[in-house]
Length: 455
Image (cartoon, rainbow, N blue to C red; front, side):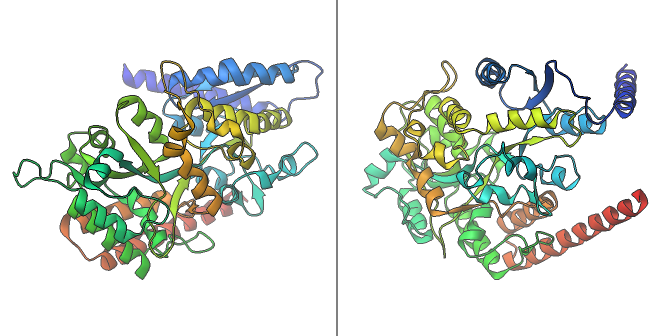
């Protein structure tokens, strides 16, 4: 039965591909109403923001455009399949790192003529680093929606009891290690800490900011090869190992019983941990009595965090690109981004005009789903660090590349070897870089052959 259903689904997809192949790339001019489609992922209840706020307002402002809304599970595969079938939504919400390959494959429409045209937008109003991941061969393939940032979360009660000053933007690696040591407590004397000074999610993802803090990079300037085998990256991995082996509550995610460090932080068993801006509303909701603050990550040779971003793209096969641009422009307007932040407050808006507006500090949350922020003091404690990081340029998206998936797999193995087997950081990073660069060259060779056959 499963095989039959699979074959039926494939047959339907092929049939739709044939139909699409026979229709023109762009609809002929019409005086009637045009319908465009858009797609998102996320929690289903987030759909209300689109279906009850954004889309009705957009359609009111543009009475000749109707929007069909899609919320997809298994989002990446659904978008790939719909593109293969020629039925991709006109306007697609994408993630920076995961969708760099989509840009390279030609799935996204180049937008320079729209962004810089008479109905365009001011690029200067957007956090500049976000454009870097959306450019390819001189064209721009999306408009940023938000930016997420890794920060340092800390339990105020545990700091107060230990008589230690709270973390701030001046903290260094040494300050982090010193505080983590003082805050690690074996209360019952059984040889195992009841409270650990520092904890962090296990793996390559949380290692990345330390590379930049040490002065290293992940990619060559053209993004075509990794340079993770640098002395700076090895220094960062040594420091990362010292944190994980000396202070982490458990030595591997498998030993946590399925729990992440955020759950231990919520229960008061962790004094400091590193996570992204997206976790703040969940912490407040799940642990309403927890007194916590957030600070920028500590400095090594330089201050630096890592960021990702969601952005809005237009499918290259869109039959209504002009109307799709109007929706993209609306979804990335200062007003739309401000509303999104006030509703979810998981990732700051991509526009300076939204970040610097008084409304950025007025967070309502979603009734019954996400708590809001109750006072200016609470905003300063939980979100004040965000503008410090962004205004000072203390974060980057340079860890991302169209080949990130290849590096991430090899880097995860390298980090595990260092943490679990005590391997030499410089040696494993050299091996990871060599393996990744060979995989990149193999992939580029296949691309060249494909291009030659297509001519």
